[in-house]
Length: 167
Image 1 (cartoon, rainbow, N blue to C red):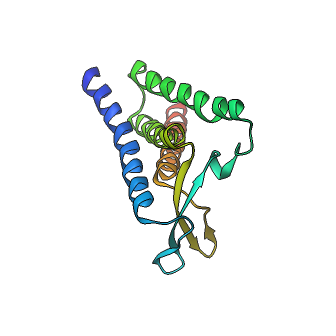
Image 2: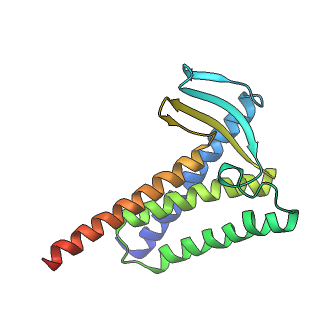
Image 3: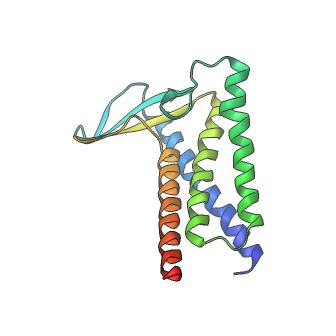
């Protein structure tokens, strides 16, 4: 695949992840009241809209204004731009790693957009399958988690390949 097509694909993956997140959050903002409970699959999959002014699990929620902006908006923005730069600059990365990083960047971009435009991140999905229980999250969080899983799988597959080569 030539570099131009590769770079366009990377940007489209990032935009698609952020776009799906934003569409779902828009639907949640328009159709779910704050703290309303909508049971999708009994009490196992519930929609409840909240606003999270911190990061993951409200981390950093109580930071002072400028410190909060630096740690929850400015540094993530720099990291996201560096991630795009890294992907575009390094053309020999494994596809699975590129895909994982695109998912992480897209999810991060979706949450960062919320934080910059609305001052908080809209979360609205809660899962409770007895032993598997989550906090309230959004599709950007899912994108980040899927991306991290892909990155870990890539690291494992890469290690397995290296072990086979060494034998």
